[in-house]
Image (tube, rainbow, N blue to C red; front, side, top):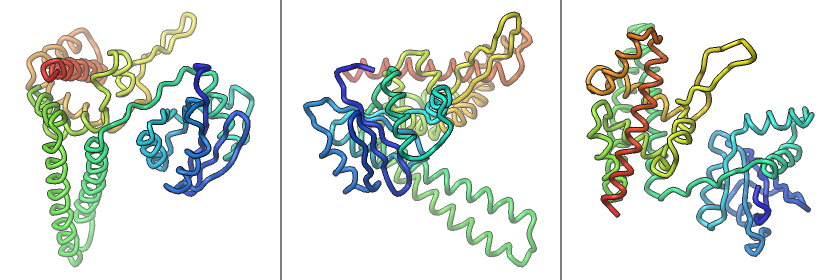
Length: 308
């Protein structure tokens, strides 16, 4: 880690933030007031850099508040930090210990601050998360109607009707958010021109992979979770596997690639070539997902040059 920054490690929980700096430790509530207290204790002259773990959403308020205050913040993979703690011989797990491990991890690794997103992109991500919740609930209700007494079918159908109206409403809000931002609107339209990429796929990529046009190809495929990693040791040659990455992007990209493998001539030919060489179906699809994603990045970079 660059010596010119002053690190602040934050262990995030639902109710509180455990803070560990080089020379002091303290605890604040995980609220706007608590985070404001943390910011006051960080001197701008010391070039602060905050590091926290991804905690299923409880870190969002911290991330957004720090970015709004122009304080760099990195959201680290918790699995990496736990593996680092084990490598240090630390088995115990408490909030102060976790904060200390986050700080030590940040001191020894080259971490990059998260790219701040426009308010519209943050709103788009929130709406898409809500759309997923509603879609999942609708699937559960449809499954229930297949294995439930006829007496409650009317109640289930009423719920499905309500869910359908809520999904339509949230999708309308998504479209309004996109149309309110010229660049995001242009990016969505750019992606939709690619055969196999539908409206929802474009939404997900733009919302959850906002830095797509700022990364190298290797960084991009790793971030999306479609980069196969080697598993070799000595004479043993294991199967390469994908791991980690942004699951929301990967899931949507898989569905888009399935469509593209039938209707996009380039992707179809690519998948068929891999299959003809004996590659398993899923291996061929992951390779095609990677090709699709890189093509998306290329098209968005062209768009950026045109807009500039």
